[in-house]
Length: 502
View 1 (cartoon, rainbow, N blue to C red):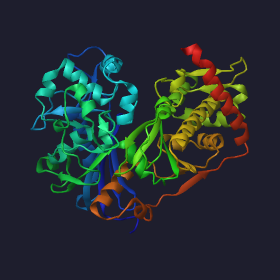
View 2 (cartoon, rainbow, N blue to C red):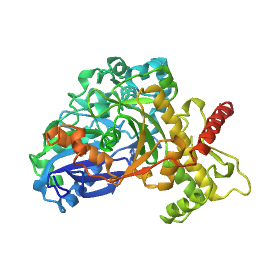
View 3 (cartoon, helix red, strand yellow):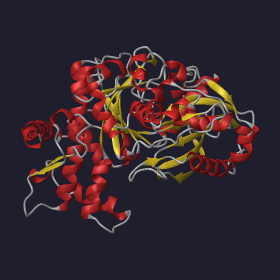
View 4 (cartoon, rainbow, N blue to C red):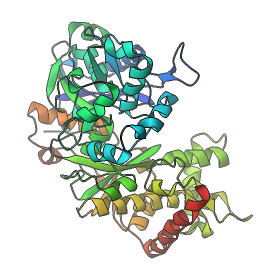
């Protein structure tokens, strides 16, 4: 196979902030892409702050993006279409595919009270033991419970429930399906069995028969209809291959081996591994670990969710206002000029205390050691160091819970582009940090899954032989000893602040 391979998978890579259509060829090269911004909408006749997704608007933007992509490639080269989206969100639908209620956004606060009352019915530990999930107010099960209590007709009139990948896939091929990667974000699966938990669904007065047939990622669910061809331009009859939740496909598309941790770094960071064990222990629960179903049957993705570049955006907004894109280069330049340890500044990046490895401490974002001589370069470097301490903290939890030797960290996403941050990550963790030129890991993972499903590749290992991507390695430097001592102080600070924030 060559870099100009004509076999194309069209990936609908849908994020909460950007909707992309990406054409990926069989050696992992991006042949074309197009995107539009995405955001939830206020719900008409809803309470202030209620947010939903306009599915028709999402589909319209995806169709426009698809047409732009098809102008740059030969539509006859498209061998399949697949869909990957963010998790947790979905909607009830009638037999004809129309919605009985719009998709509630994960950013909507309406289920906060429902989440607070869940412990009256089942313990958080029992939920974690079955589903691998920690309680967060936007878990899909809370949406189902909220609908049952407040808009019961939405469920009573529905034929089934589709997660976001299923809603978009239906637009392409008029077939219902649900797959384990998205369903594992619902807090409603028996994750060990890769099937529904009747006990959890009963909380919303539902049972497994309400949901569509399980179909695994990579399998064909249907074929592009003539109606979809008119709307988005993809030739009718093209296979529609099952995708799923973007996080798992980013892990898969990174090409990481079983002894490598994967850090998906953006506004939020997710540190995970691909593991052949589902081991929801008490300590894992107390340390904020969660599990999702891997793209491949028989594997799971233990992971920790924590704040990432959202913290840096907050600082840049405060100390580099009105600087535009120049602020990123300026940030790196000024932070590089400061010594390891940032002249005594300790930055704790727990801006959302319900998430991350420090969850059990209840600590909020904190900056220690400020003086009148503190420079913004020191503040910025301390933030990069604090995020890296958070990463090491999460890594140590993973190592304790998952008995696999982690020999490196593969960083993907926007946060992989900052060389200073990558070097600090390597120094703090004592592990090599690996990045690649390929940035569209979610699209690549979805495309590889489709190619495997179609038989072009037999496995991910075989696909690695043909997916060309230059790697860059950041090895731990002489600063590692300094950061080893500072990490101990970081953990001590979390412990000391516990009572203050409580």
